[in-house]
Length: 372
Image (cartoon, rainbow, N blue to C red; front, side):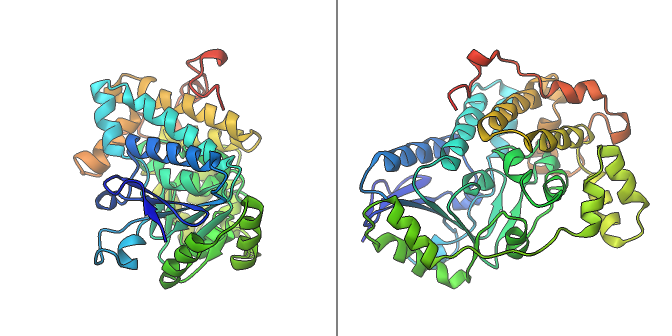
């Protein structure tokens, strides 16, 4: 059936009859991405791309629960994102591998979204941040009733990266602004309605589908695509954005968005406003600008913009005053959930500081993503 190339790794690489099979295998961390995982995924995808006998690639996440060899063990949370504790520690230590991580992760995102062969992702359980970057822009994004999807970066003083500006800005209406700014979690049906997933299947059907993918003998990628269209037809979505969401998040500025939400009398608006008041005020302004700019950018340019932005997250201020370092400290290191944002309120954010996030620290011919 399949042969394992390496069985003691955070990414397991297998070969089916004509499919390349990738399993994120860091279940104790909900398969959060390390630099080693990014490199392993990149190399595997390049190898599969250049192998004429591979017609399709499938990805899944493993689970720390379940008996070895069971479907429960091999289908769990897809990926909780990047390893944010590593971001925090590397930033404070001045570790150059932090820069390597973002450059190589964004290059991987570009490789996935421009891949010449179909990719299928089993987006079960938690699919957040960097996990979304692995899934968006591919042939089939499969979700289950257990899917918990989010781009929660504003909760840690970051912005929705890994191409988030590109795929969120292309959600219907102004859903992208809502998801990017609040970081709120959505389930499978909302993901389908918002254009962030393609197919909803029962949890119990994943193992059989994975097995089916592994034994098919397609002569080329075109045949694999035809099989996908018949086996996993795209679901039509007719859902419209929530009227209150659309009204609030279509406003031209962050302050006007907050004004609409805080002046409304419905429960959803009040809860949303309260959630936004807990995020980094600076990064809310930056994120809104990101989504609005990204709506009119191609993928490569948008990823280059994000690489500039993430550099600013750790270098725009002294590292001890970084919103991102402080946000991760509060959520994941000290776990006091009391970030000390600077400034503390949306109303006093300096527009010049927001604009600085979009100034590249590199000339075009020296940009770390100039190759995209």
